Length: 144
Image (cartoon, rainbow, N blue to C red; front, top):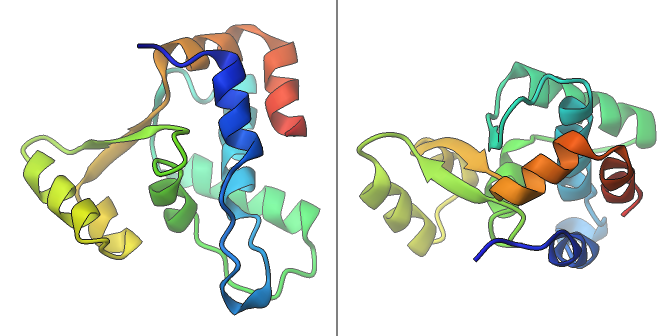
């Protein structure tokens, strides 16, 4: 069953934020915003989100812009891996690594150990189509 845009927005509103070390980390919302910006710019052309240079750059630029005094080193790998737990997207294994990815997730392995088995994160097809076609939908996600 496809995810409705309203349900997607509700999931965004209830993202679990890492509060370890006492400082709430804005990494998940910033990574989602980075994906939406790349969709807006026409650089994210399908629902398969790669953890590539474009996404890393957009993530870091947003973090620097919104939190110029951020005291911690931020890595997009962590929110990329954990946004699956929030139902924002699903992780797609590299060919032949389905069992390894499943085992890494089930053992609650570190993000890097999970991601070495991941080809991309995949947005729901209808959510991607809505974000790609509707500026108001992109604006709403950014506002959330």
